Length: 121
Length: 364
Image (cartoon, rainbow over all chains, first blue to last red; front, side, top):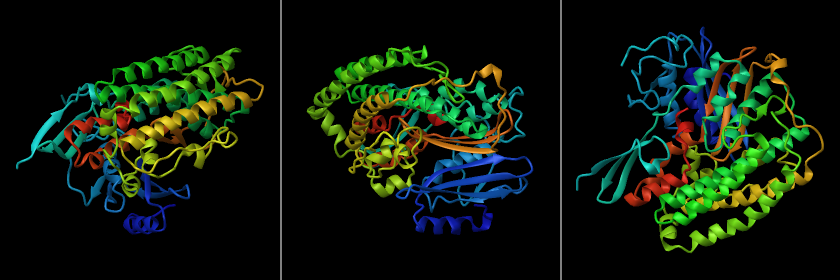
């Protein structure tokens, strides 16, 4: 289900009320011209899955935090910001979770020079 | 009284890999525990973007090195879905049997390791590891390897199950069936075990759903969600499979769920061996085909020993454009703080142990 960024939090809150209380995963795909953020949620008693999709311009890369709706989003959002450089609005800066180097290059972006020599040490 | 902050790890025998815990203590009571992961992060999701589909299974197996077969199978199934390859019934049964054997091996490993973590229970450790080895021997017979099997291929397996495999598997299952009551007898009458398991590390049903925990940890908190039952794959729906759950949400409930799952796995393997249809379980010869993806996006979930693992694949014709892995251990580790709040320092590792973490899977 495609959705606009501005409506994300209200839509997720509404979905949670209707039974989709379990967050499966937040992830992203870099299509170069745009970046898609995916929210997989589940109605765990009915075993029904749903996915929300937001398409973002790489120059304006942020999403609102959904941690107040789904506490499980905590680590997924941190992973998202480390791996894709997506700014999570509404959260303060935290220590790096998975990435242990500079926190300024985003490994899962297609622009990441993954086999270039690393000189940051 | 001011809080005491102590550091555990990153290299500590009870963290089963490289995990650092920063614990805030009030006297002997845990106020907050902050897990630091990422030491084993090697960017598997990025690595596969530069390799052909069938070059990747060996990378996948190193994600969860205690149950490599299950991650391998999940990856190959995801690719099959993208390519539109069908798995025939004999191959589906053979995969199911191997997956359940892998679950048994993994849970036995967990049982041994947990007995060790609880202290002074070395018999449990020896028993668990000895019996795990018997299962590994069976897997070796089927695949040629003790660990890291790389036995999945598009549409089936790399090699057929050997002709006397069914007979060996049945006798092993009969042996293990008698062993599980023996393990329970060994630990459940032990006062140290009971005190560190019962009522410790509670996670309520609503917390479990809020924190998104997976697998036995979720089922022990009274949510009977199991991919094998709710979104059945292979022959699970034909085998009259029953998902195991408990409602207490403490360490003991997580222990019980895994013990019951082992019994269920034994039953499933026996039933699947009996019902297995005749025919070849072989997959496609890998060198003769250059796979081309038909579907751009494929998503597959599997109930792995540690919980629901999910892969989301965006396929270029011959390789992954993006592979996103939902690791059950990653989200279970994130929930550690909620379980450990208010417990005694000594019980922290009992809780940590019942999460059954594999750090390579957490960090990917």
